[in-house]
Image (cartoon, rainbow, N blue to C red; front, side, top):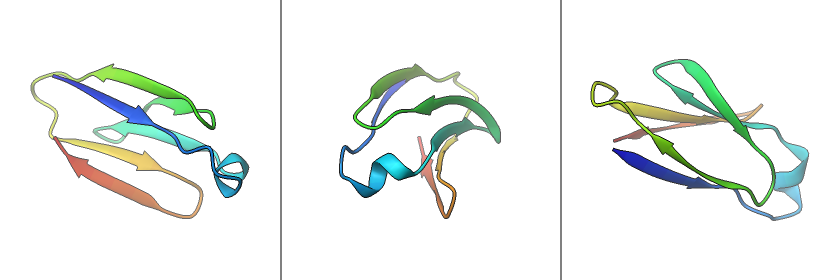
Length: 60
């Protein structure tokens, strides 16, 4: 399964580092305005988008 993650280009977004985690392991980081497509293994069920002050878990 593949999933596309796109980062915002708003002014506040450029001040924060964003990382993408799969099953608790960081797989990549996104720059402001950057988008990436990730291929997920069949056994994974959650992807986490993490910033300094918050994180959001998404069930896939």
